Amino acid sequence: MHHPTPAIVAQEAVRRLPRWALIAVCLAYVLPGYIGRAPWKNADIASFGYMLALEHAPWSAWLHPTLEGLSPDTSALLPYWLGALALQWAPAWVAPDFAARVPFMLLLVFTLAATWYATYYLARHPGAQPVAFAFGGEAQPAEYARTLADASLLALIATLGLAQLSHETTPALAQLACATLFYFGLAGLQFRPWSAWIAIAVGLPGLALSGAPTTALIWAGLTLFGLVIAPAEEIGGSERWRTLLLLGLITAATAVLSVWADLLRWQITLPARESDWRALARLFLWFTWPVWPLVLWTLWRWRHQLLQIRRHRHLGLPVMMALVPVTTTVFTNASDRALLVALPALATLAAFALPTFRRSMASLIDWFTVLFFTLWAIVIWVVWLSLHTGVPAKPAANVARLAPGFEPVFQWPAFVAALATTLAWFALARWRTGRHRTALWKSLVLPASGATLCWLLLMTLWLPALDYARSFAPQMAQITRIIGHPACVETMGLSTPQLVGTRFHGGWPTRVLDSGAPQCPWLLVDVDARAAFNATPHAGDWELVQSVRRPTDDNDTLLVYRHKALR
Image 1 (cartoon, rainbow, N blue to C red):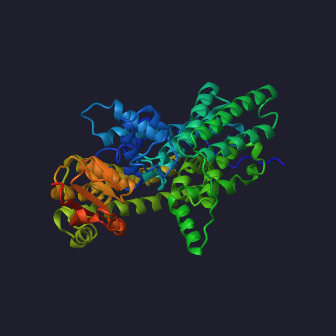
Image 2: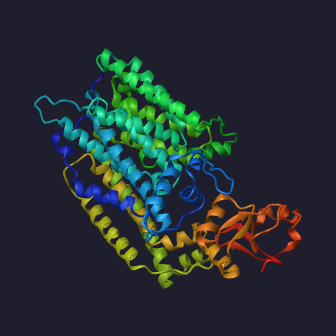
């Protein structure tokens, strides 16, 4: 049975969102978090360490990145290659940690752009078009598609789970970018075949090289199956077989590449306890907020079209792209980093909720968003004022308790950027909650702008405190005051993040303590490895000088030993 589309959209509702405003939101979201901060524990600084290790390593070592014999937690190659190449090409005056972030900044930009274009092409699909009015006046296909693409980009930026992981130099962001390229390629095959095939040919192998080969192969297999069962009017005979052949070749090449590089890993681990299921539910609720209520609304309002999903690519493709990482998150205990690659597809589904909204629901979203993000912005400003003026006293006391030894630093550029963004937020909130003609994208302007506001405030006003709390710099500064600048330092029991922190922030070459004669006058031992160190045959040759903890974490405590003979 044929059901009419639930989208009822007039031409006036697809008025163009100014490009300068969209670009400004994107820049305000992308740049903070990449500029001016130190590498954070744990995944961020660990990945950075493998990039540093590859920078001067022979090409043969690039297939098996290691650091002091330790392999990465994620079996990936591409993100470490990108960072190492950026370090090699960067001028000497560029800080290494910033140089390594540059390709990841571009990956985030590609993700945002690919999400926009994927939604645009899906919205051009005949099954996605709004109801045609009897006397005309319905939204034109191109303007309608552009408006939904703008909305999907705003929805992606508004998603809470994207903020931190998209600003780290980790395989998770490379997976997100490659997955979104593949998504864009599938969505644009009908409209831009050359660009689409390039995106597929880059995205699918790139996803495998970024540490998610199983996800890449499952997506490819489901796509091949979808092409086989697609209706004849959707894709013709010769075109169908040509598409199957090309995608089959890319899939086979991805599989061979994954096996050759030894990247395939798979395990099925369901949450074992009730608390695990509750934690998983909380992850889904906050990580995909505020997109998931809109996705549920889309699935409900387009439910009749979902029953004919083969004929409605604008629903079938994003559902497939979201369902695989959602399932992976549940069945592999992969947590938020697996769920991250579902966000672009979920943003597309969220955009298709907007043509079915009533005005009362849009107003509810607006007022809730204004209150939610304004409250958090006030909290961030109050804590900052407390740190710098002592008024009110309670927030500063809490920071002193959580981060002992932290001294606030006033930074004029950060203050100006935070103040200008806050004023822009209040102006936007006043404009949006006033009386204006309806445009579909308006319901997501405030969520995206609010998320951008809070992220920018955190990365400006709170950045010194966050760096102090989440980096190894304060701990290494304390150790430097003890040991100075020796030619090298022995280590034992240090994790990969601790090793990288020692090398990068301390500036000391390190070597793992072995059974042979020590070569360095100083030794750093993780507190958990103290018993193992005491059992070594040369433990008596070292004297304990001091234990140094990371100010915000008792578990990151290093024992500083000095060799009795090597002075």
